[in-house]
Image (cartoon, rainbow, N blue to C red):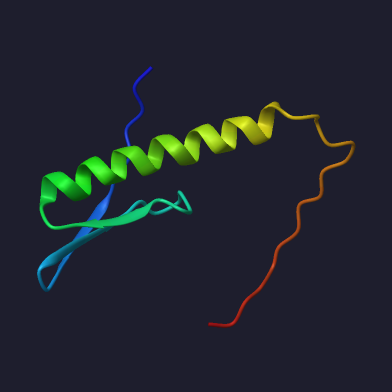
Length: 72
């Protein structure tokens, strides 16, 4: 099943820098738009595989949700 993600790609000097908001760890760079797009596709795949692997492990006995406030 195909999933769609919105990437932000910025031109910085001679490089393109790309990332996906809401998907930590998905960020890369490339010399061309094609290169950065290919790199983003690979990074998304790797992060999703890693997340799936973490979910497949033994389920937690208890889950806590807590709001964390950070002043930036």
